[in-house]
Amino acid sequence: MPGTPHPRPHVLLGAYALAGVPDPGGWYAALDDDGLDGIEHPVDPDDVAALATVAAALPARWSLMPTTVAATARRATADRSYGLASDDEAGRREAVEGVARVLDAAGRLADDGRRVVAVELQSAPGPGTGSAAALERSLVELAAVAPAGLPLVVEHCDAPRPWGVAEKGFLPLEDEIEAVGRAARATGHPLHVGLNWGRSAIEGRSAATPVEHARAAAGAGLLASAMLSGAAGVAGRWGGPWDDAHVPPHGPDPALPGPHESMLGPDEVRAFLAACGPVPVVGAKVTTRPLDASPAQRLAVARATVAVVHAALADVEPAWSAGVREVPQGV
Image (cartoon, rainbow, N blue to C red; front, side):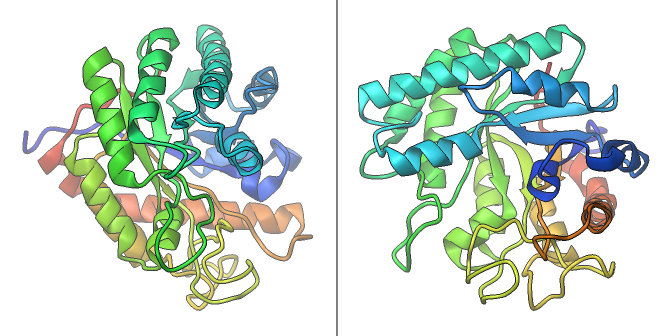
């Protein structure tokens, strides 16, 4: 309804990609001063106990969004039968059982007073060995064991396209939207889609693709998170063209890369968030170069990136009230 205030989004940082270890040198206290609300952090289904250690290092008010992306990508690369979207029943069941352990760990954190805004899942293994139908079955099964009210967010990773080898090659966004929508209607559980600017740009080889993806997911009423990583169509300090290297956005702060190194800048951030509309999670996942950058240099990149996100939100949030969507805010 026009004029209705929307909940302020949680601003998260995928700090693990930048820092390597949780809270190096007291980062979190510094970032808390900058208006950060929490972190996205990887969790291995075979080592869910590590999640509690990470949570213990966070400021008390911070939220946590566990993601299975690193473990899923590693396993799916080695075994194309593995994943929530796998048409191989044994591989699908193994993935479901692993994610169920993650959900149990997230529920225990919530019971202990830690805010968990969502758990991010991925649609491995992709076309050819995976399908929307298999992903839907997995989501229905996971909704039955997830803590009540805990959103499950299928994070879109790049899908195969005709012009090159995919970085991850999981399901196309339209298949994820279909599976998530069907499972949400069948279960009534908060099931959603999440986007990462860089992965969508890598998939489409264009800065226009993230906006197209945002409009599609938001138009389906399923978009719950908008994460920001940059991308580059040319080789540079972050690797080869279109590598999924978590390049920071370019911007006015000298800690950030230049426009020739990152296609993602303040204008692109604003356009993406405007297309997303009101979502409960907005954040960034970035890393830095050189690889041996000092903790102070890495913290400077983190703070500059968070500042870009906040500046863009200040520009787009007034328009969000014209299209409010009710999205669960976590447990």
